[in-house]
Picture 1 (cartoon, rainbow, N blue to C red):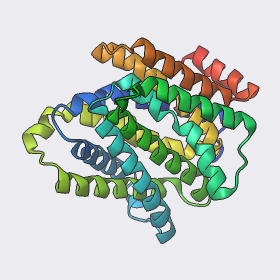
Picture 2: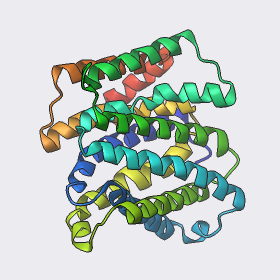
Picture 3: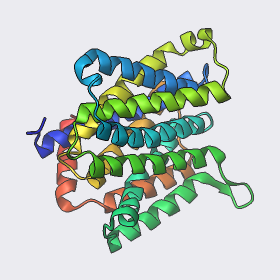
Picture 4: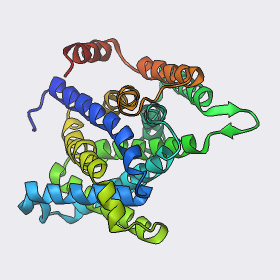
Length: 298
């Protein structure tokens, strides 16, 4: 993996975006039967077991430094997924996907505040457009304000942005698998604690939600989390967030395919503005690379 080329890293991130996009409608199916924290606890538990089965020796040889970094990433990851799942109870898959994609615009802000990275004029314009798109998509009227479910999804975008920045800044000299293992274990414990304290889910409910839980655990969690860390050793956090923000497009497509979800005109306009804000962050080289990836349908 150390010899991974940039195009391979971008291909992996593109596949991650597809898996995450599929995860939105599948999650909505699971939430019919179990609560948000219970759903995420099940996903993370399965992911933990899969990782142990794949590499049992590495799973039990995690150093203290890897635990610290992995636990920090797992904290942001768990909170991000839990609040996203809460939002998905009342928000459509496609709409949630585009709000989640705002993490790409939050990444440079966090990098600037925490690590002194420069925010360019283009970044500022893109962030302003994204804010406009969010309000167009989420605010029904001045009286009713922003839809509560959309605010939950927006919160998840912030948590995911912290996790993306953390991967780039903290994992460079650490073993990827061990850090990811610590991250997933931490997320499992956090989601399990929240589920025990706030939800009452029985075994029958878990059985009813088994298919969405297993599919999202493998396709939208285990594979993306491990692959993301390898890919981000080759590409920057902002570039990774950019490619993975395509999950929004896939969320709309899969939401329509599986649940016949259709965006309203206002929601579509807001999504379009957010998409334009995302594209604004791209350099010509990245635009060409993204075009090639889409044309090849990787």
